[in-house]
Length: 401
Image 1 (cartoon, one colour):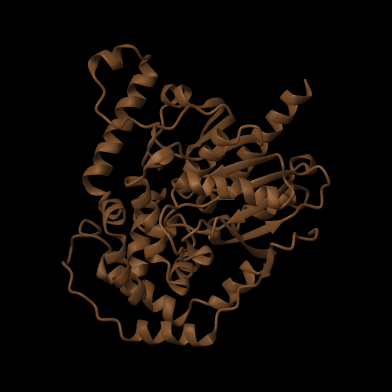
Image 2 (cartoon, helix red, strand yellow):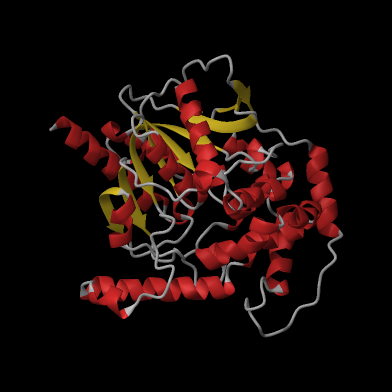
């Protein structure tokens, strides 16, 4: 069920020219493979034997047209906001009292992250839920990413994206709405609630930037905590220390020289695949291979949106903009008054701490799960959907008191 869009919003349908797919296949066939060390697993990066098999599957078995048709089940649109082309899906619920909700992906994700959650959110009755928990779901691509890219000017950091989202929701007729996100989507959703508290009903996050133990806790800091929180703080620090030691090279490169990186990733589909698949292996709740947590073809569809749009470089620029921010974007984030929920999935590299989250957020819900990781909407869609429903139901019930 979709109501008419304003004139500034243009219908969009994904239809990749066959020549682009033929070019991809030709490049995959002509891949120039580097040598690798045997018996080292993932220690040096993506193992050649694993990537060769994944590329074989990509070339000969993966079906882009099926993935394209799946994405086109969503009504999609584009609009221009603050000089940038914004692509988004807009799935309105048939329930008249549905809550508007904007959900935002991160890097190296895309709107593909939400393929398994939009339906249950928009039509809970068809998925075993309560119709009262329905949402009108807006799923935008971040400027510079995929179908919203590339951007043509600097300055697209998280705060600017949040302001664009506020305008997008106004343009769609939603004066009050909720927000949900992880990774960059969490930073954007959090800022959306902080900067526009009069319009944001609530913010549901599966990551909270800055809520982990970023420095080794002192004895004095630990002494002020209870036993459980003390152990959690030490665990958060150990995980963060290990991650910063071995897992942040991608971030440093994207925050300093994204243009240099873009040449290789835009020219080589195997390079683009390796750059992304490594993160799905490291950040998901998987023991050895990323497809233990995320469907292999779904992962490739996510990679395809970067490859087909040539947005490896423009998506990376959001890291540069954060690292080189000035003005409002450079100031420490002020506390948010928007009601906020935090869903914790155990394989998330940035393990949040409740006492830190409570310093900066109006935290009204805290849920810990026993499985799942950074890409919650892809790994554990049912858990995420249930928690989003419960959070906004909680807010409705409170307003009804």
